[in-house]
Length: 335
Image (cartoon, rainbow, N blue to C red; front, side, top):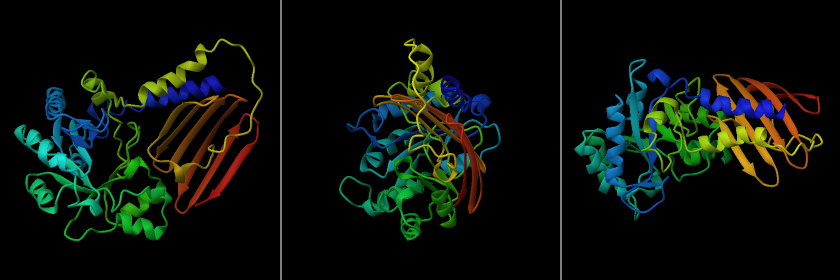
């Protein structure tokens, strides 16, 4: 069962790109932070590399636009978004002229408490971007981890910003759940970027944006068509590794790990895929489609655990059932 679950976890990641194949499904989104300054491959890019990414997408037939405009595109139209998180000054200094040269707008998500602070853009610079066709989005007041907040804290972090009317939010640290998505919608935000891989069924409150990698230029067509992200190699390694294990040693059944929950809907974002080495191997895949959530888990180490669960949410109630290697059904109900 463990190997079967691991294989399914890998299949879900690859199948998630099927919605993008044929240029259907969510827009292609490349997410950056700094431009033209050191920051590592997942946080920074040079202006020349940024232009190369844009030209590559254009050669593939993609129209570059903003997040909210991409959601309004015609079904089947190939659209892509260049996104910048945090509102750092280097975006204005380097990304703005680089994209303006190509006639392409960007989308920048702002940490509002940082506007005008050293290293961040000023309100005047944001107005200039907006006048040039850029979208100014919400990255919360202080970049807080939203699932950890009280209702009052969520309302504060996602609340209206005087003088601005952002339509979309980028969840800080890609952390969000059903409660956070409802709070964003209640605050008038009509779309949200959640990170994670492409999903089979899209949710405008949890748009996928796979992590960038140093190799994006090498497999940009595959990334655009199939949603190949930074976690894909780790996920594939986790799916294949159990099949390469030839030790033959049988491990005793273990209790469900503490992070295994068949009623995972409220905690589930846009998908969770992990492969860890901490004295044991673990694969966990969670996939959400509308009101339904499917959760798979497989672990080996001091003991083995495999399980699956299905959850259905009709706010404010979540109903779920799961079966683990111990043979016990687990039922859950609650918010």
